Image (cartoon, helix red, strand yellow):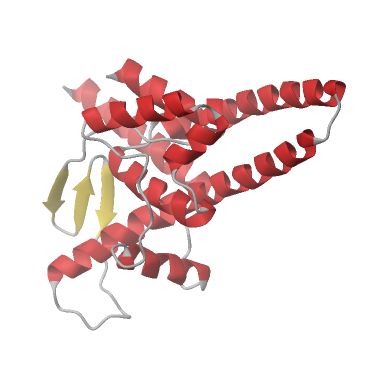
Length: 222
């Protein structure tokens, strides 16, 4: 499983886009918070909603938790897409020498992306990936599957989508549907209006390292 996980995440660097892990989601509720996979989601009282339904509050908190984190990475991917598209446009009319230099630069970019984001990519969970793929579609207008298909090849996209499906994991063809994903849409609108702050990449790195240290400490106690 760990080997397959690394293979799946390597696609992010090979295509300049991210895919998600194959970890199966597990959820448990404890006093004051809910735990999904290894993510501890606090249960906050809603100030802007007059709802007394505890299930709604849990779902809202869950959506806020994951959206504020994956929104950050969806924006990063959107920026990469814009940059890559601009380079492709320039390369259309470039001479052979310029195209060769562009290919070298692209290769270096992929390595730099891997060096920069590999730790986070390896720690993405299935539930985070589900949010990420929908947010990527919302930001770019293209599914993660189609991004891989465009910048890699159709066979690669089909293969990774099939692998993820076979492990009951995230579908790379996930799309953002404003009606179905109304709560996700609402959270994003709150983020873009400045009412909810997205979680910075720096903070997420800190959370990941803290979680990793906690898991290691737990294993030592056993």
